[in-house]
Amino acid sequence: MTSPGPTVGVIGTGAVGQSVGGALVASGLCGRLLVASRVPEQATALAADLDDMRAAIGSATQTRAVAVADLRHCSAVVIAVRAHFTNNRATDVRMGGAQVNAPVIGALAAQLRDCAGTVLMVTNPVDLMTRLFAETSGCTRVFGIGSGLDTARYRLTLARLLGVPMDAVRGHVIGEHGEAAVVCASSTTVNGQPLPVPLQQVRHELATRPGRISAGIGRTRCGPAGAVMAALRLALGMEDGVTELSASHRGAWLGIPLRFTAGRPVPCLPPLDDTEAWQLEAACTKLRAAYRTACDTPSHSLPSGRIS
Image 1: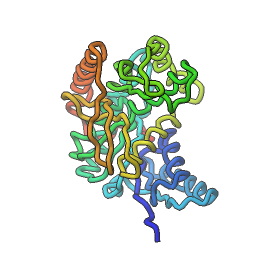
Image 2: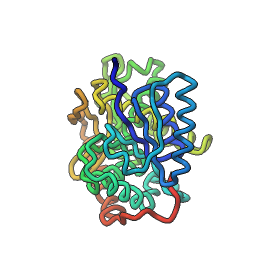
Image 3: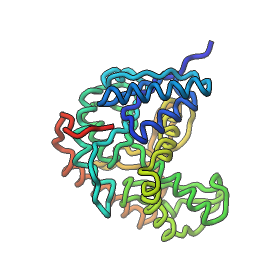
């Protein structure tokens, strides 16, 4: 008799929460999928919709709506909540959610204090929210999704520019999931060989791609869900490999490559040239300062606005 698989919780029933839930049911990665939201009716509705999907495709994943506190014993919890606000920033767009999302994440951290499972943060600004959740909750396996998606976009972009298969490209994007991202061009290879990277074209695509997607469909959803799925397979020990996740580094939390073996992560930063090393230190400095401004003294009560 086969094991039913791990239990995974998803907090948030908006675009990303729905996409993650659908991917989990379709993949059969988990035996049970527990859905939580501040609005119980939304969690119940999403769980029912995912249950319909399960029935239609014959998935073994069982879905159920629960309260946040019921997720404490999950093997993994994905946090994809977002306070309702209008982001009017033209630059550093992801940082626009720091002040409003921090109380939401602080409240969830208090409810999930000392949870032993893996926590994957999706809420932006993801590097700050990952640190806030980890430091408030005391959980020891907290990672942020962001640089893994940036790296996937980098490999996809470079493959298209060079006319090669994506599998031929090896490289990393680290640092902030935002404007202080570091493209590790000096260690990038194609078919195992180093080559000059058209950095200006790559950076332009990485900077503008999320905005184009959001302008067309409201917000990015499938890409983040894909990054979550890739990280879950590694963190739950289903596969061994490397992905870029927000984790503690030099007094900040920012994206670095982690090599997972049987679910255990070890940092594996690539060699950096002088420019890349300076950019990474600048990202650390920026994120430390941003954290002090937005998250040092968070309120642990949920804001009056809805979250989804």
